[in-house]
Length: 135
Image (cartoon, rainbow, N blue to C red; front, side, top):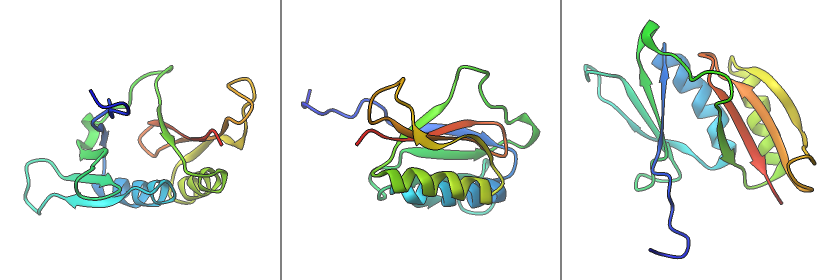
């Protein structure tokens, strides 16, 4: 196994509306270096979006499930590594401006470590998200 083998392949998130999901996730993932790299064609059985740094490294998938979409319960969230503290701040601003709710303003969380700078959001469907920079 390579020294820095990437363990996590991708994360799948179910949303009620693919249009709202696209608007929200395109905005919040851009500061983290993740961009829309896949969009299912019209008429596909499940509308799907894929985000990653490039087409070979898709790491977040968004699936439209209408009213059947449901986030995991309390105690669960998805944390994204951010390249800078500025990116954490941009993630938070973009999320609030795109229909999400703040669940913790950008700032140091010294109880997690002396350089743990994070922000927390809840997406329009209730998924809890975090962006963190440990630099």
